[in-house]
Image 1 (tube, rainbow, N blue to C red):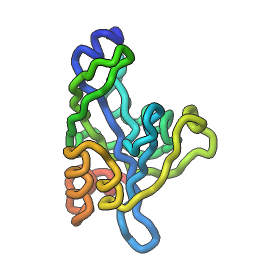
Image 2: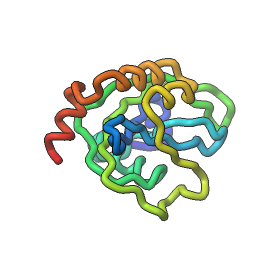
Image 3: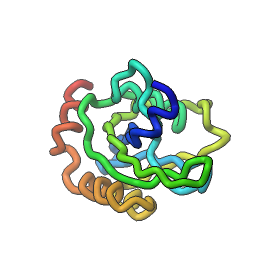
Image 4: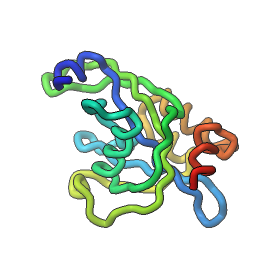
Length: 157
């Protein structure tokens, strides 16, 4: 699949890196975008011959230095307009795959281009620009352990 084919489809893949803190509260790892510095999830175009959850795993490593287990079922989707290099807006749908983070690398590919930070789900929802992503994060704030996508990941540990 060429870059033109990927961008023509407007479908991206994201990882939603998660962990529970010492008090049992869910935390979400967010990164800043390279262009505007706004808070986002690690995401990118689907890669050739990769399962979508493998793409999410690669994006989490490259953009956030996060290592862990990624679920094979999306936890949700959101929409946003990606501004391309030529200035046009491409409507995108992002499939989001949950990831239980096992560790963070000190040195990762995009560490000089991005910041990373753990947030509670509600705080992360307040910091993102995309309404659909904010709604997905708010859904996670209440009883995240009951979500089947997260339960499946936790059982595998």
